[in-house]
View 1 (spheres, rainbow, N blue to C red):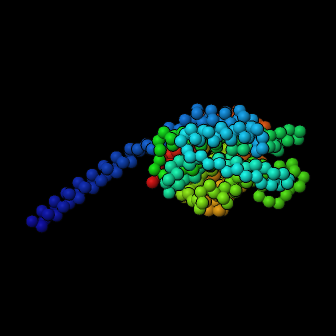
View 2 (cartoon, rainbow, N blue to C red):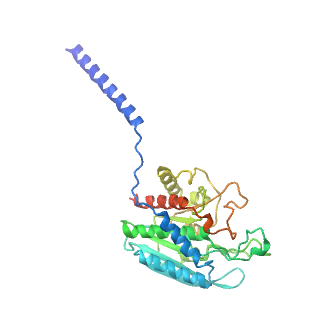
View 3 (cartoon, one colour):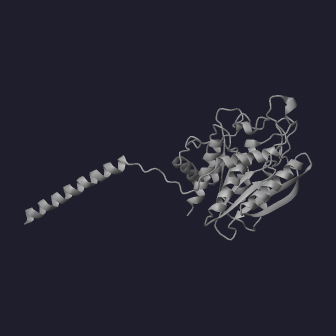
Length: 330
């Protein structure tokens, strides 16, 4: 009887062992493709939102083009079902002049306590100070990539949120007066924080008292062909877990070439005051280059920053990645 039990046990173990081997081989052989949970991001409508912004002309604060584009953005967010709030103020800039700020905020599901913050700047630079020709450096840039691309992606995300609402709240903010830092051709640099003035104003005085979000994502220069979104330094410092979620999501969706596993430099951008004043641990998705003098693409802060640089594939990679992050939120 003892020997029979042993024999039966050995047989059972052998069977289980073989089944385990077969199971292991099967699981290794079949790689399940990733199934996205988000709606399809439409790069064509995003491209159109960029064209419509650029058509107003350079969105330099204090100009008619800036005011008209602001009206357009506010109306667009409202048409997508957002509760729209605007912040308007004036600040004294480095040269002593008074400049207007107009932050435009679209809130989805404002009643929800859990919130996610998405943001971009909508103004464009008043001088092309990286132009090689000194006579062209005083001209304002179109800012198709530097400004309009991030806004365009967020407008398409707003449209998707209206069609397929989430169980969490989402705030989309278009920050103003990000890109009027002192020009590189200036004779004397004035000490102070002259970049990201709209986001700093909001971080100090948010549209909702004691505002906090689970995390934030800044989109800046997300439209050009061949973009590489390196892991920006402040993003890794303040929100490393969100960096990993975004980059791993992009990889699952097949956009790993746009989001390489490489670290870039520290960029003073709108996510910095949002992080410093603890409104949301925030990251910056921004096109960074290791092989350029400036660290950015060749059109950065030049008159070449127009629609010729914009690539639908890049817009799609960024937009679908951010959408997927939203629609897989627990």
